[in-house]
Length: 180
Image (cartoon, rainbow, N blue to C red; front, top):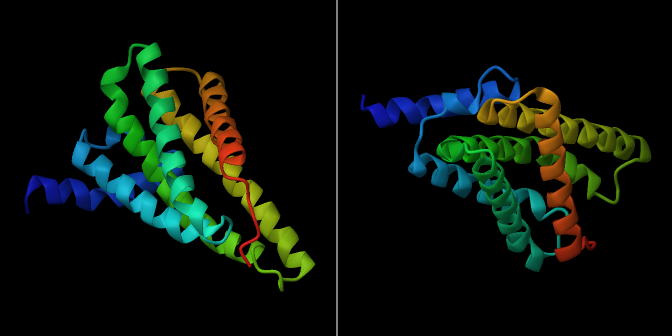
């Protein structure tokens, strides 16, 4: 088995380990090809998930905005803290866990977009969505902690900043409309 197949075969496990804070961005290989593959899968997962919440014209813009914000944020922070050599693995980790959170949130978004769902089910899904967002902020803080060699509190501040920048830009540029 070639080295590239060994590496790529282990990537899902490493990304899952990141979700449970059991691995770090440096555990992913430095690979522009892998990073591009993760971006493609992120885009595909985003097309599926965002169709339930955005108008059809905004789906692609929303996905590209998500990639661009994570790319620019990670690049800017790593450059500012003289850790630019860690960009590829950090961005791969960020986009990889974003892909996994897209997949995890898909059923939640589908139920939340269903106008026929019961009030109790909607409340439960809203709470589950809040849990997923909190978990994603924590995982991305874990990634920043390792990529930047910083304390968790500072990494959480960066992760919340990324979340709020993404949320603000998406609300400004892509207002949510009913798709039903």
